[in-house]
Amino acid sequence: MQCYDSGDYNAALDKALDLAAYADFAARAEEAKARGKRRGIGISSYVEACGIAPSAAVGQLGGGVGLWESAQVRFNPTGNVQVFTGTHSHGQGHETTFAQLVCDQLGVPIENIEVIHGDTAKTQFGMGTYGSRSLAVGGVAIAKACEKLIAKGKKIAAHALEAAEGDIEFADGSFAVAGTDKAMSIGEVAFNAYVPHSYPEGVEPGFDENAFFDPTNFSFPAGTHICEVEVDPDTGGVEIIKYSAVDDFGKLVNPMIVEGQVHGGIAHGVGQALLEACRYDSDGQLITASFMDYTMPRADNLPSFDVDYAPTHPPDNPLGVKGCGEAGAIGAPPAVINAIANALGVKHIDMPATSESVWRAAQSAAQA
Amino acid sequence: MYEFSYKNVDSVSAAVEAMQAADDGKFLAGGQTMLPTMKHRLASPSDIIDLGGIDELKGISVNAGTVTIGAMTTHGEVAASADVQNAIPALAKLAGNIGDPAVRNRGTIGGSIANNDPAADYPSAVIALGATVKTNQREIAGDDFFTGMFETALAEDEIIVSVSFPVAESAAYMKFENPASRYAIVGVFVAKTGGSVRVAVTGATPCAHRALRIEEALNGELNSAAVDAAEIPVEKMNSDIHASAEYRAHLVKVMAKRAVEACV
Image (tube, rainbow over all chains, first blue to last red; front, side, top):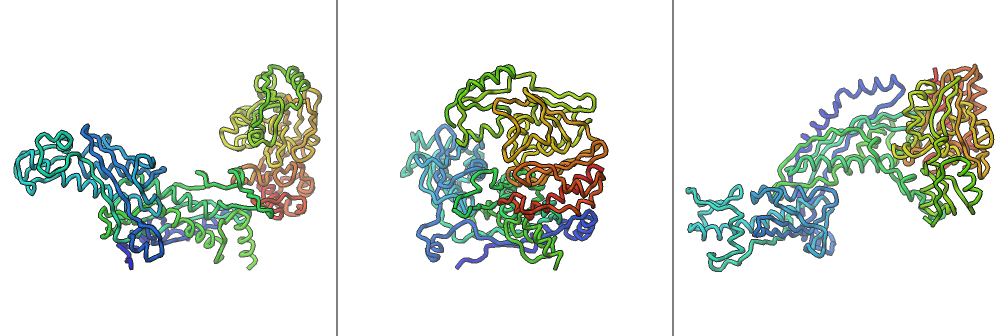
């Protein structure tokens, strides 16, 4: 059985209530009422299971696969580093986030790092990008491959620097003999590995390592999203006035990318809550076959988001990360629907809450 | 898209000649409906006669209380025109809210009213403002121009030259947008001109029309509460996945009231 890794749910809730100025909501609702509008506020707190998944747990759940990931980190004699990953980036910015991991760990400039993904003629077998697992599982495999490079580098440096392997310390891209000023850069070590003229006995040439990672637990991102809407009771139109999100994704490798992921997730969630539906006619013909009829969320359907974090440290993940890809899409639908229900004083409204269905709910609520 | 022959002309008479010589020709204005329709193979004209090179069809002029807009003037040009903004601000605003910037930079007033999409914005302004449509053959009153869904009074080889809008004392257009296409689910144009109030509705029914019931209820006054007395026939309303007939009938009143309020 798996246990929640870490979480401080009250911290996220409290922070979100502050961000949303929840305490002053009643005054804003009164002001809206004076303009003939109805304001509502909706809260959604969630815990999700990401970083999928320990292969044994997958087996227990009846899954027919192992959900490990693998990575190959190839440090070339020229000094550039190629990172092969089995996960795939289609807009999530893995190229940047994974390069940052390698940059921090190996101490090489980020412009020397190339992340290679998606071309199955070049990359290894992978289990895929979903379940907010790419960094939490695939990222750890990259870190493990880097650790192997460092361990091998210590052997090569010890030989070159005529020191004991145990005396070699690695930091900021440099292998140094502890307590001395003798050191060589990771680039020089890599060059030695490919030109092994004076080389430790029993060590393979080359500076190219492969690692697999099978997580020991899921990761459990959590958070609170608060949505404030204004409903026009005469038309059923819903405007999102304010949207506040506070999430626990563990450690953030690249905060800008994480915020972008949250924005995109919320937009998807708002689309699900208010706009998107596949409709068929009575003959089974799809009638939402183009964007003239299928309502994708667009920028003018959304406010500027207020995003913050309440991170905790997940002890089971070697990088301390949890995953951020789905949080917005999980938090947004209940937050939006709760806000509409709050505005109208009703218990339920189906998704998508189109203007006509909101207008009908407003009519029923007024008659009740 | 099927193969067609493209004709570039520089005068109205050359356009008419090209049309008369064509098997199954179509005039091309901004192409914002025509080209997607051809791409979907819902239309396959033998000849496309491009009106884009005809200078006499372009431009905006204001004189003697009338705003005249050339047929090939884009929505973007109408929206940005200081003359239109001063004379009939509601018309400039309507043009500025058609589609998106790409559509507004290509789509034209002549193309829009000749196509007569049931949910297009311009037809409501043509009717409510009592505009006159000038063609290469005659002048057609706005009230007589729109004859049915995607149908107009135009003959096959007839080309709109310009549309003349009398300047109203006050006017306003209120549109409830389709959330996907941003066409009008319901759009209501209200104009007070010379003591009478005219109301036109688009989006609600198969063809934009004058809303005589609302005009009767208003009885020449810009009093939004009076709209409540008008009965909107639900059975005449369009119904689709975005709005039922009942909801549209309701929205006609709401948008009419808001347009009347915006006029005051």
